[in-house]
Image 1: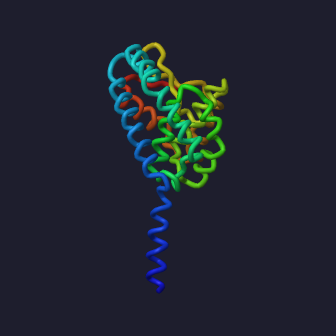
Image 2 (image 1 turned 45 degrees about the horizontal axis):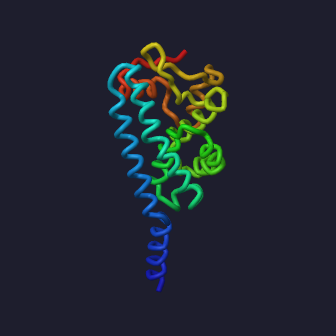
Image 3 (image 1 turned 60 degrees about the vertical axis):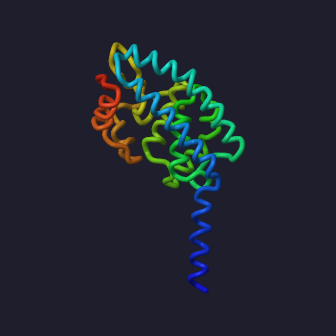
Length: 194
């Protein structure tokens, strides 16, 4: 009887980990399309990359934002219980690229809770927080945002630069030097910060 109960709990737990497998699959497919397109933009001069990303914003980001908003309206915040870890990570990537902040604002409380519950990786959380703050005319907290400027990637306005490394460390982000190295490898451009 005890082993039957354990097995029942195991299968019930596995099923609840993905309450919406079709939505999970859709989010993963949307993320793959998004990332493949962005990867193609990462070669070339900064002007070429800016032009390419602007085209992606119109052709991919706008329809994706519309769809993830519909998903949010349908099932609420797509946490790991609803769409699994990969589904939530895909949602976070797509939300990061949303051209408007409406869904970011609606998701703020849920994303903060999911981060505290370790459902969202530190970099996804930092990207979310920094993007929202920058769009609201505030300085970013974690230094995740860079802008194309004069053929380089330049750190977007950042709160209290002197304590940036401490804030990053506090939420388990890598040091800026490591992050910048990764940006340079992806975009093939020099990345600078004060």
